[in-house]
Every structure is written in C-alpha cells, then in structure tokens.
Length: 578
Ligand code: ARG
Image (cartoon, rainbow, N blue to C red):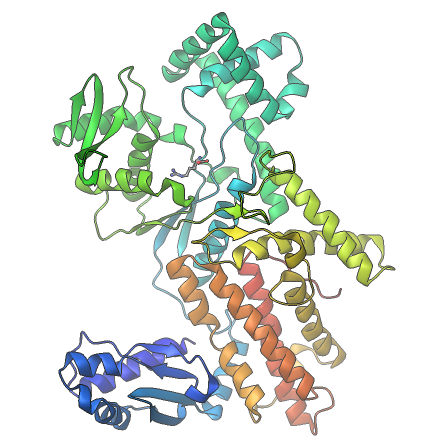
C-alpha cells in the first residue's frame, strides 16, 4: 500500500475537477505533526498564487476539499492556516490495509513495472587492500541494490574494479621477482606491502622499470604469460575482497566483477568513432574532446584527454565505454553509480561525451549517487593514530571487539556460540547502520561510541527492539495463523503505529528513487519508537479481551516483519534473542 500515491492521485483529481491546470502539483506529504493530520497538501498557496488569486487561497482549498473523494479513506479533511489541506486517515480503512499487509508476502508493497537497473558500486583497486574509502560505496550501493530488487526490478551489480592501467607493468615485474625468490606466499598476501615494494623497485631500479614498461606493452597486446600474471593479481585481490563482502553481508560475488579491463577492447573503436563524429580531435599528439560546458581557468572550453600521446587510454575513456556497454549490451533502463563526490567532475565529463556521441539516450538516466567522506572525531579524514588509511579488515575487527564488550557487559553469562553470533550481527550491523543512517551527500563523523549504544538511532537499539517484539509474539503462545480476528485501532498510539507501518512501501520507493538508505533508517527508527511507546502504554498479552489481544498481536507481528525486512534491505541481520 502506497498511501502517498493514493492521496496524491485523489488530490490531483480534485484539482482537475476544480479546474486547476494539470501542471500544478498540490504537494501531498506526510504531515510533520499529528495536529496536521497524517498527510498534508501544502501546495495550494503556490497554486493560487500562480493562478493569480492569492486572496482567495482559502476558498480554493475549501473547494478542493469539497471535491476530494476520500469517503471511507479519511475520517476528517480540513483546511488549516492560509490554505493547507490536512488529511486524517480513517481507522477502519487503516484496519483493512493492515490486514492486507499482513497477508501479503511483501508487506503490502505493490509490484513495480520492472526496469533493468545497473548499479556500479564498491569498485576497489587491484593489488591494494580495501580501506575505509570503499566502505560507503559498498554498503550504500548494496542497500540500494537490495531495495530495488525487493521492489521487483532486474538489478545488475557492476563491480567496476580498478584492474587495468600502466601500474600493472610494475606489479607484474614485482610478482615475477618475488616468484623467482619463492617469497610469493608471504608477500602477495600483504597487498599493501606488495604494491609499495613494487613502486619502490620501479622508482629506484632502472632495469626493473624497463621490464615494467615492457610488461605493460605485452599485457596490452594480449601476451599470454602477462595475462596469467595479471589474472593472478586480480584473483588474489578479489579473493581477499570477497571475504570482506561476506563479512559485511554485502551481496556482491565474483560474478559481479566487471572491471576496467573488461572495456579495454572497446576503446580503440570508441576513440575512432568520437573522431569520426567530429567530437574528438588530435591535439599535440594526444586525442582530446573539448567540452563547452566545462571551462578551464582561462575560461576556454576544457579539453578532456581520451587517448595519450603514447597510445594509452584513460579512466575517462573507460567510463565512456562502460556507460555505452551498460545501455547497449546490458539494456539498462537506468544506470546508477556510487562513487565519492570528488569524482563528480570526471563522471560529468565522461557522460557529456556519452550523450553527445549518442551512446546512451537522454531517456536513460545516468545518475551519480555521490557521497561524502568518513571523518574522525577531529573533523579530518578518518585515519589510524599514526595517520595511515584504515583498512576495512581492521575496522571490522575492531567493531567485533567493541560489540563483544558491549554484549558481555550486558549479559556476562551468555554461551559462547550465541555470543559469537551476536558479536557478528551487532558489530557489523553497527558500522553499517552508523553509515547508512547518515544522509550520504555530506561528510560524517565516524564515532565508535555513538554507534554501539542501546539508545537512540543505533543498530543495537533496533535489534533489541526487534527481539522485544518477537518475544511478545513467542510468549503469546500463538503461531501466526492462530492470531485471528480483526485489527481494531482504538487509541491514538495504535493509529499512529498503523499509519507508520503502512508507510513502508512509500519509504522504500523513496530509497529506490534517490538511493538514500538513511530514509529507511529514519523510518525504522521512528517505527521502533512508536511501537515502544504503544507497548509501554497498552498491555498486549493482558489486554482486556481476546479480540483486543489478537488485534495488538497483529500490530506486533507486522512491526516485527517490517523491522526485519527493513533491516534486511540495509543488509543488516536480526536476532531472536539478545
Ligand atoms: N576504482 C575507482 C576508485 O577506487 C572507482 C571506480 C568507480 N566506478 C566507475 N565507473 N568509475 O576510485
């Protein structure tokens, strides 16, 4: 059930009946305060102004209300203030919707018209360990993927791994060197060292550097042996990264790897085609595209290099090819990229070229869902005490340790297996939730203390609330089929809880549209607070009569399912007991 859509349509029909032109929108929203009803249309003032009748806004609002067909849906519709329309939903109608949501496998969410959506996320680099800089893309991307999939879209995960470029010459040269010294096992295991050593050799040893340059040429021309060495580097890196994905409960697998190398064969044709279309030109030996809408410091059209003098292609060239491939071959209706905001200009340049060349039609959106950085408490980029980048493995290990302290502090006698399970679910959940609950567009301060508390908008709070709801259900001794009878919404708390439960679909629709999992976090938190307040005020198992007890159990059941499903869309697990 999408109440927002339903009411928007109803208000739209009333506007039409009142003679308001179609282009005007009454802006139906969830009300900010209960005094303003459950939903509010607050666009009437703007409409009457545009129609040139600002003095009679109230009258227009009244007219719309008289034409609004909400019989059986609303218990009260009123005009407030200068011309707001406040809609109070009818408990009887809500009762029917709750019953329907309970009997639907998808909590009442309707099927969408399925689109093919490519989501580019995570994208770590080969021969480097994943660090905190990859966390946001990986988990925000995955939450969006899960949400789109749940709604019924055909989602293609694209892990645009950095697996190509001139650095592979030096990496192959280094791999050969340590292989001949039989140190390979030790060294390759520590990717960070491996990369650093390779770079050191490259910089100080001219012979090594010469070999490295030869390997680049050989690798690019498809030399078998070089390919094998390269493959080894990719495989070792991705096997390590897969462990991180699994620990993070991120749904990426080996099959989702579509790295930069994948597009390499397309690049010569792209450059030739851009030249033929008159978009790319030779400039001092390199091939460039000049873009009018991007100006350099001198105020001239900015030049984007797509092929260097030495024939090498660039990151931008690959992104042009990859957008084309996603549309042409993967048949994407929509393409989303989770990449940090510092790469915005890069993407805009690549996509401007893509559009000019006609590789992806305007009807297929290319969306950069950018995000800010993770900061330390000092407001600077999150680093280790010595100033190094924090590896994801280390971050996850620390989360487990801290979760262990939190749980044993609360429950010192827990058995070892149960403790281990809880540590994983709470520790990993805490990091993910702390990140996912922040609006992705800005930087945020990563603070261990705030994410591992049983109070506030945190994962332990939500997971604990979930166990409370499921424990009520267990203590009732009824299994789900035995909870019969109608839902009765009598008290204000029950009505509020019911409305919020029924807003699940519109919440995840927003997340799917904007790629903003924090909207789902806010929703789940709010739902939890509403349930707790309801639960504290009204007995469920000791309700005055059986009918009321069952009605309240149904609300508890739908709350439990919504929390579990909602957290699942965030890639966070729940436990039955803690
Ligand atoms: N590997 C890149 C990095 O670590 C991110 C790639 C993002 N995806 C893309 N299509 N450019 O910065």
